[in-house]
Image (cartoon, rainbow, N blue to C red; front, side):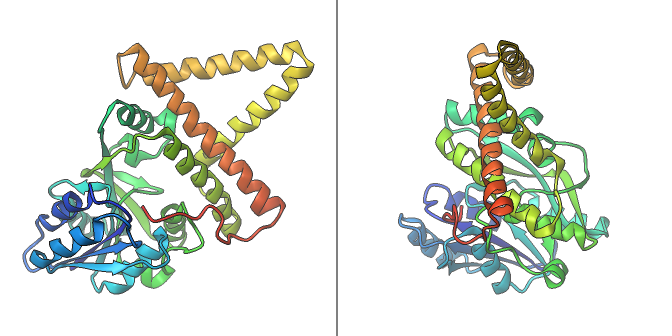
Amino acid sequence: MSISVVIPCFNEQKYIIPCLESVCTQQLPAGETLEVFVCDGRSSDNTPTLIHNYIQSHPQVKLLINEQRTTPYALNLGIQASASDVVVIFGAHAVMKPGYLMQCLQDFSTVKDAGCVGGIIDNIYENKNSQTIGLAMSSPFGVGNAHFRTGMASGYVDTVAFGAYKREVFNKIGLFDTELARNQDDEFNFRLLKNGFKIWLNPSIRSDYYVRSSIKKLYRQYFQYGYWKVYVNKKHKAITTVRQLIPFFFVLFLITGVIASVFSCYAFLAFIGILGLYKLIGHYFAYQKTKSFMQAVHIVFVFFILHLSYGLGYLLGVIHFLILNRNAGNQFQGHNR
């Protein structure tokens, strides 16, 4: 099997060369070829220059300009430019560990019904804040049963990060949905499963991901995840995963709890009691990640940000897409990352 790697990119001058090095130094079976497509959304930093210089000694790398500047356009640009049997969707903010591509190809030969294979993300922390965010995002209390973050034995799952896809998947179900600013991979994987393919998770397929250290960016990211999940649900007339509803109901609880507490002291006591239970459970899971009291407190805060932002985004999505029946348009669009 020939293999392509597609990397959406925007202002990644600090990370793009380590990313490309990790891809280009991958070992492949004898006779197999590799092509790499970096799809840049018109970066304003030194990223394009670094890529151009890297290409001089690595002709298997190609630079494509993503004029639309969003992730699904970048992905589709790379997929359409490639001619390989397998396409890997990767991130400029990550590096492949040795054996990544080899294991993907081996799994396709052994797991015959897999249309996609993927593995586990290992978080790389650049400071204390990013470590706290990464620990929260690797906890089942923070992200539910997102196994590519929390880890599990090999098995079938509903989605993976940085997956490898057979060419026949794109031929059958099409490309990524360009109306989505976020959740384009989840939506694509939902269509994949709906069309009879399966997704295989192998924990020996691993990549390092540099965790961003901004709570503000984390809030915005998960708000958009929640918001666009509603559009995906509406489009497919289905709830794609049960875990997506939990932050939504959490936000509804917060809103109704605050309102009810104004009119009833009993409602206020119940509201405070349930929030206390939430905090207690959060600390239980936080202490599974750290023995530091202060870091555990910070992890619980990140849990709250994850759940609040996703739930608020989902609520706004319900209002926009289900109640007001709005189209996707350009709402909350952003640069590819």
